Image 1: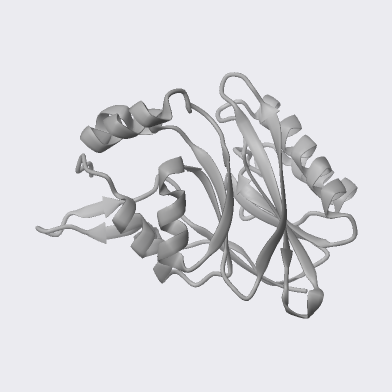
Image 2 (image 1 turned 60 degrees about the vertical axis):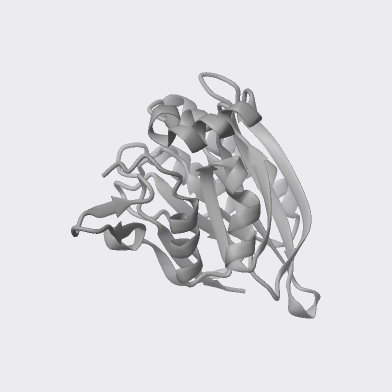
Length: 233
């Protein structure tokens, strides 16, 4: 269902209502960053990805006609972190420039007791598994190097299905110790190394990304189902 109005308020409300300590968002409108942090009580970091050409003008057009501009509002990958964890460092890597700019960004979190945990978030090239595979492996190599001896969660929209393209996932586990994919047919994954997997990555019910509009119509806030996982250091 399309409603042709900004959906920041609805999206922030749904995100705040989910149970999480760290949220990884891909291709979120950059203008939403400050409000998402405020509404969820989180701090965060972001990296700009595709279609960020004239941000001010794109924002005006998005307010006037969101359905018309669609993804041409511009995208960003965001890592949101709720206390007591805090972000101690942030780095980013461009993993593709064509057909669209794709970036991985990484954050080291400082946890209570002076422990550290790292997160990497990316959106690989869509519809081209032969290109997305090397992008994901290059992103993982950088994230592991930046993390050093700290545990790492590596996730996002990898645009790779393990059932159809098992090679990159085998490399991620063999070379970097990153495991466990969400599902054979999934493209969104949350992999980890140096952590116990308490609850494996899973797709949440479709209703978790939907709201009921007047008249009983369903409003979908994302074209992907949310992925959730729980890890123990």
